[in-house]
Length: 81
Image 1 (spheres, rainbow, N blue to C red):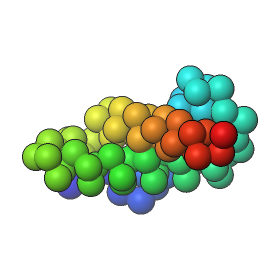
Image 2 (image 1 turned 90 degrees about the vertical axis):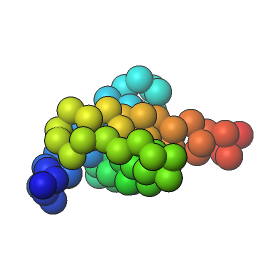
Image 3 (image 1 turned 45 degrees about the horizontal axis):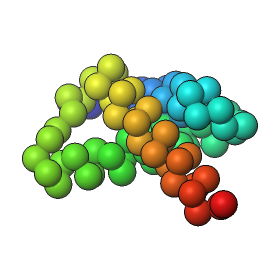
Image 4 (image 1 turned 180 degrees about the horizontal axis):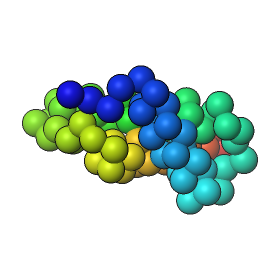
């Protein structure tokens, strides 16, 4: 059992917001939510490909979303510059 759609939005928003604070990115609320959700999805896919599966609860998904969103911000900056 996962955290659900509403839980994913909340966790994604928190992960994106924390990542934007750590990475000092000037992004808005919806971009933060998107970064957190997309970052979590991408990192879960990458980790799953190598046999690592994050537990489907709030804290592990927050950490995966945070790392994924930070990677997306760093990747965007690398492409932009």
